[in-house]
Image 1 (tube, rainbow, N blue to C red):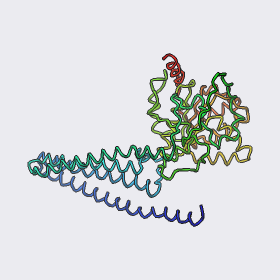
Image 2 (cartoon, rainbow, N blue to C red):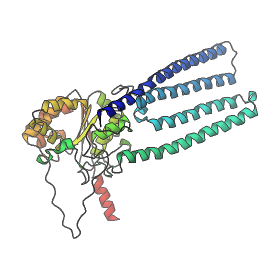
Image 3 (cartoon, rainbow, N blue to C red):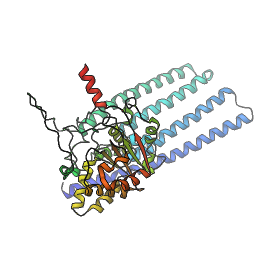
Image 4 (cartoon, rainbow, N blue to C red):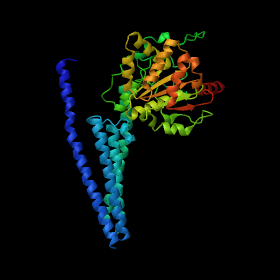
Length: 439
């Protein structure tokens, strides 16, 4: 892109700040509603104390207060969500009171929430009319009902249209190729052939990757799966690439390089024989990221370790945190490359920009002493500074089988502030394969 075009684009983009005074105007309107609320409340209290308030008056006054609160809720959602969506990121990452809805707000969501809020406000007004029916004309009741039904219909249509619009946007900006691994580990037990390795981790992965299994003879040649076009798996995109039409959360999810997109809500809690569901509910609040604690998932292959790690990672991205995912072999390759280039310290410092790193599949490949020392440096550097999620098939007491002499010091730092989650059970993938075979 030429320099004049770039300058013009930046200048046009800077005009978004013209909207900032509008949101501060809405803040002033919020103050007006605060005044109106307490004024109505004071009048209600005075009339109740002096005995001038009957039941109908109290009910109508309370409905007015509810109406004011609903409008104020709508205002704060438009102010905060709209400002972050259209003007500038607010930067609430790590704030304990960060609203959960903020990470899901975009222009479509704001329109739907606006429509539903209007329906709620209209329903309160209509209820006020019916409560005071003796002082309300039939004409007013009729038109109040018709207008309310029109609001409901328009909100339903807008909500229906926003779904296909969002889905079309996902297809246009991300493609159709999200990995569809049905196993609870996602890609935990081994990635499919269509899963590509991020460019940052691919340079020296061959040095630490386990030998590939021998091909199975077959009379019919097995076709090579097509390269996934999913935005989470593409190796041709850099971490800095982003779609300007995506929300900040989607950009962070893309940059995290998850092998597939998993949600905590999709996890089959009935599959593992031994699993602490209260721990998962607690981890889902992401307090461990804010307090710089670690999480270690331990269990046999196919019990859901990677699914849970990715689910927590996606939720962290939605909450405003930068996350980076890779297998243990890929992390080893990245650290080995950095050491060879003489920039290991700079690489570890650069990773500080990510409050959460995920190290998947620890234990599937043993490491030599030099690589084990690199992992120790990674864990030691992030100790009490940032969070790690680690998944593995062996308890921490057996990590000497993987990292040798570096294991005790590494485990000591990793487990000091960590939630250890153990999953027991048979492989989810094998169960599905056995079911399919039986059918």
